[in-house]
Every structure is written in C-alpha cells, then in structure tokens.
Amino acid sequence: MRVKLFILFVIYNVTVYGQQEPQYTQYMYNMSIVNPGYVINEPSIVQVGSLYRSQWVGIEGAPKTANVFANVPLSNKIELSANYLNDNIGGKVNISENVFNINTSYILKLKKDLNISFGLKLGFDHLNFSAIGSNVISDPTFGNTNKTILNIGAGVFLFDKNYYAGISLPNLIPSDLSIDNEVAYTDASHVFLIGGYVFNINDFKIKPSTVIKYVGGAPLSFDVSANVLYNEKFELGVSYRYLDAISGLAGFNVTPNLKVGYAYDFNTSRLNDFNNGSHEFILLYRFDVLGLSKKYSSPRFY
Image (cartoon, rainbow, N blue to C red):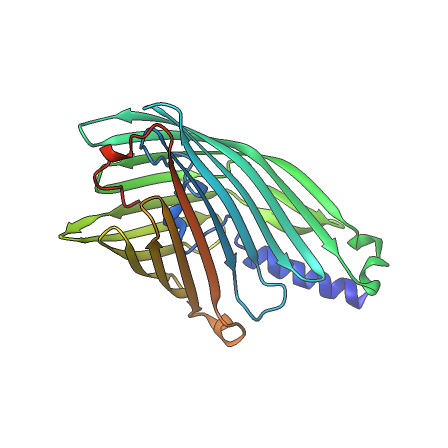
C-alpha cells in the first residue's frame, strides 16, 4: 500500500508540473510545433530537422524529448509540415508520449511582403504508463496503461520579411490518462502567442522574439529571446523563461543548407539545487528541390 501511495504521489507531481505541450529553448527553429499556421514560405525549399532535449540533468527520470520534423511547400499557397515527437518522463514509474501530426497551411498575400497563413493540425497522441519493479508489478493497479487520442489544432501566422506574429491552439481536444481512477497525466488545451522582429545591421541580423503560453488553471508562462546572426554563419543568443531558466544558445551554418545548434538552460527556480541544467541539440537541413535557392539572396531569419 505504501508503494502504491508513493507512486501515485510521483504521478501527481508529474501531472501538476508536467509540460504537457512541448516548449523548447530553440523553438524558433521549428515553430510549427507550437503554431500549425507556421510556414517557411520558400517554394522549392524542403526543410527537415531533428531536436533532442535532456532536461534537468542529474534528476533520475527527468524528461527527455526527441522531435523529428519537416516543412514541405506544395505550391505558392499551400505548405505542409509534419512532426513526430517522443516525450518521456520517469524511471521505474514512467509516462511516455508519442505524437505524430501533419499541419496544412494556406497562405494569403496581403501586401507586397506581408502575408498571413491559416493552419490546421491533424494527428494522434499515444500515451503510455508503465511501472517496473517487483514491488510495483505485483499490484495490478500499476500494469501498463495505454491511450491513443485524436489531436486537432489550429493557428494563424502573420509574417513579413522582417517580422512575424501568430496565435494558435495546438491541441483543441483536452485529454487525460487515468490509473485506478487517479488522473496520471493531463493534456489540457493551450494558447500560444509568438512574435519576433529582425533588425539588419551590416553583416548582423538581430532578432528579439517571444513565445507566450497560457493554459487554464496554470500561471502564464513566457520566453523572451534575443539571437544575433553574423555573416549568415555564426549565431549566438540568450533566452529567459519566466520563473524557470536562463539559457544560452549557439548555432553554426556549416553550409548554406546545413545548420547545427545547441542550447543550455540554467534553472533559476528551486530545481537548480537538484540538477545540472538542461541540454538541447538541433540539426536542420534544407533541400533545394527545384534549384531556386539563388532567388533567396538573404534567407529568412525565422
């Protein structure tokens, strides 16, 4: 009985403090994960990427997240993006989430350089609870529990060559995973606001940006970032997540089409006493399918 109560306590804490919707330090390289309306808007350019995040290093069972994604333009007006995400938290008591979705965005030109895109997300979310250990598996309450749900989201993305803004609800259908009538995981509806502006100063591009997240029953959360790109190759940045972390970012364009990036989060909350920070790695590659990349004299910095 004590083991059962302890595990339920752990699960309760996962439920309360779990991220539910993924929020990366380097979210600006795959904004389709938070806004289904996001588009790269470069016909013939297919962008693929992967991201791996190890959070709160030093804490057993801390979250680990892997994301593989792609942006594929079908025409000047329609663009697809796809995301596969695996989120894993816990050790012997483990909750994992596997998400796959496809976003379809429609682009409308408002002025010469001003556009707006409307995106719809459709996919599925598979949740799995498992408990490992002789004292645990003997209790039928803690056998494997699975649940697969439909995932629908929507977003609007307004963008110019130098700025962008968007609002989205990436998950319109709330869900939860219950163990023995106890809610182990809650995936609530979130509202995301994103925005950024690119300043061009000689060989430098300077981009302040933000992402704001709201979910009912939880405090407002936001990231404020500033990234500097030099000579289209070297990138440095700093980010602050409200009441949570300060982050440093670095990126390098190995070739015009290949980018690698890294971010380190230093916790500013009480968790700082129990972990060694969070590490995040990203890899991006752009395929010029039709050989039109020369028309983009200065690649967009978002």
